[in-house]
Image (tube, rainbow, N blue to C red):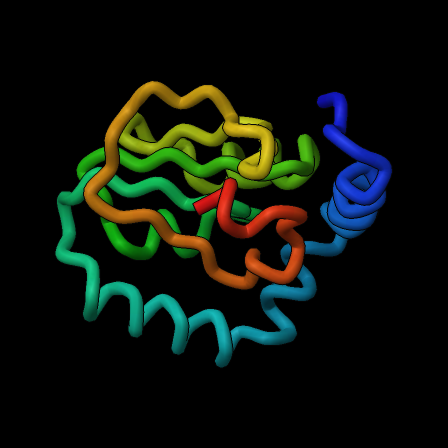
Length: 127
């Protein structure tokens, strides 16, 4: 994917370089991710149409049990891992830049943007 700016290219490269160890990092911090999953499941009823921006491994998206879920991440390596971890017909994962409007022509009931805001170049545009 072509990054939209030099800063975005650095972020893409950062997460791409960490994709190899992403599962290990998640396992090492399992308490945090389990807590976050439980919190999101409390607020998001199962069966909703959900977009997760900055989806990483796709675990949060899968955890909320969407009727239809889309995960978008800047890192092709993370997207590949998410597809392997969650091969469900109701989930799809795509490489895309939320800041550059990834081209989704859909509406969603819920958008998850966990651990993402600090990596956005223009928060207002992304929102």
